[in-house]
Length: 463
Image (tube, rainbow, N blue to C red; front, top):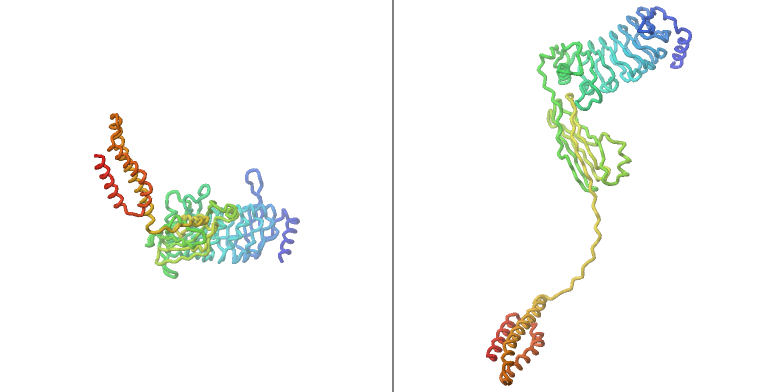
């Protein structure tokens, strides 16, 4: 079936490059120095998308027809198409590949149809698209992934549908957090009126931010109606008493953690905000203090979201989360970020984890201690004291000899009493050394007493 459609498109591009489809009107318009081909098909007898539209068509309008579906590659041969209007038909479904090869398309309008869903991923085939009109359809929800394909859309009309809530991803796209926007702020025009919005924080946030000075978003109609619950009568959003939105605030249990190699660590953070924020963990960088080769091999995988963590909300507006790291290795070291997100914005806090290794000390040789008896200290000290006593005695005897010698030199003859005294001193000096060795086992007190006795005896004899 797909090959048959491509064959028909190819034949139509060769045989009818300048022909006009049946029940359609083709005109040429001027835009500066170039001529633009305009094709308009507004007959109620048309029930399918024409396949013989001229290849040089710049603007195609299919309005008020019985077309109910847009098939795959319906406009493949219109590579120069810039404006495509499929308004006020009976379209209920659009194939995700319906807009293949529309690389120059700037404006797509699908107002006044019966669409209950839209293939947002099909916007990838229209990289230059800036205007998207979905007014007056039956859209009941906007998926979160729609924000991935809307960065270049500056005019988005979602009015007169059945939308009740806006996903947080769209609010992040329309109202970026200061400092996270790359390049200049892109201004957008949004049509959100005539939808049965729920009176919640999301729609209140859009309303208040769009009215602030320098807002990147301008609402087509600021009279938004919201209701407390589905089925209830709505009221003006400005009259509804809504809980005030609060941007998340993150508080980690610790900003720096140092843990040894092989240990277990639990990182925790707490967040507050309204609505209650959701928490995610992200590893943003690794340390290169050690094992640089192993760490640098995995550096291209950062930042990365961590999946194995736990979070819990004990009450409205509060949520905590923990992540457990078991058996730490050097690859676990680095910076972790706990990120909190709600409709009012995003906030995060860093936690730095450092893993330290255990250095192996060389074993010191065992010392061989000699066993000493309890009285060794006494025996070690006594010889010194005895020698000291002997030295003291010798000093005193030398003084006696010095005092005596001059007397002997003044006399012409030697005094027999003096000679006997000198003989006794010399004899005692010779006997001091062996006597000191024998007295090493005696007490200090007895040595002092003998010293005093000997000194007194010598003094008496000399006198």
